[in-house]
Length: 447
Ligand code: PLP
Image 1 (tube, helix red, strand yellow):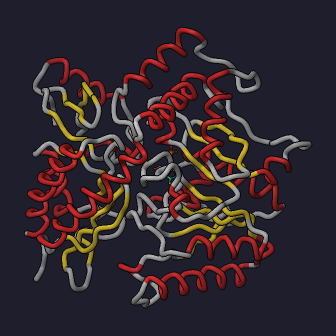
Image 2 (cartoon, rainbow, N blue to C red):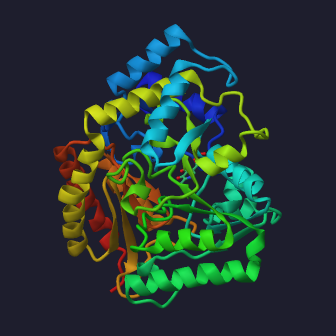
Image 3 (cartoon, rainbow, N blue to C red):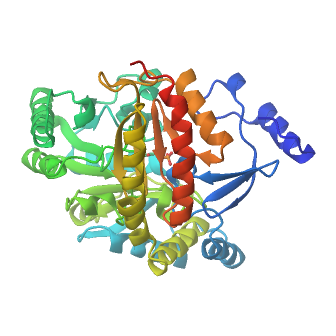
């Protein structure tokens, strides 16, 4: 929308003239101009406020403009803005320790990147070098980033135009009972059949060729699908059986998002590599990384690691990570997110689902939920087709926005992923807006 204020119009027009946007046909864009942010709210150029339940791209885990994180960036900028990765510096050392301390036992080392895709690139590189193998197995319902290797392990339709078929990537279906590929009727059946499918794919694709299995601990962009109990342990066992490195992608679900420091804590599973980004510093300065278990770290003890980045462990990004993690501890943000999920979001969304035929299923935990919107609750046909949006989902999103709520959207789904420190009142306010907006979705339901 074109803002009314002169300053807002200038920002909008310069954006349209000069900014080339991600994932979009450039002529169809109509960006919202944001000029102020605080906590769980943002304001547009004309002063209209919105509850930000997208956390942007699910990264402002401590909300916008957290004073301690802003101050840490300011202090680090005044003291030491930048230094090359080969030198040691205080912000980077401390950030690495704070991240490693929150990973499972045996994860002592962290390789820093500028974001999630680079973390995935480097985790796969480490796995290939460590195993001396090249194939990588990943999941159709998964997203791992937009660099060449990361988009090729990605499962969603954004891979298609980027797929040059040369990467040794094999995709499988993960467990997802609501839209089962395995004709399952219970979570146990779904888990067992998904594991059988995974193992037989590996056996038919050459078990000795696989360097890594990469999986989002809880697939995020693809629809917030917590795996059935025992599934990730099953993946761990398959990795052990065939000598494959297990990479858990925690880029979206790490740092408190699911009411645990890492989503893997919910399942008691220990991978070999963990990728992270986003919430590590609430996205205030670009940062990602790979948590490395001891055997893989030791593998590179005496042989050089053939990878690096000019800005690996940038002091401003690392200072923001140190401040974010310490503020999360002091404010008990992770515990708060768990409580918001259990006490407000899960029951509130269940009540909403019961009232609206357009809500096929609600999934999630902590500050991480998705509503699977359907055209037909019996056939479960999606409100918009796979890989696209349509007038129906567009109208629901517009209703949310007009009423002052920003949500995360992918295809036919609405995701609620507010900052971990969002108040109960703010969650109730957002649920009331969503409740009204879903009447628009209901009007598209075929009965
Ligand atoms: N992995 C997961 C699970 C993600 O959700 C994302 C981004 O949404 C990425 C990787 C890519 O991260 P980035 O966009 O920082 O490269």
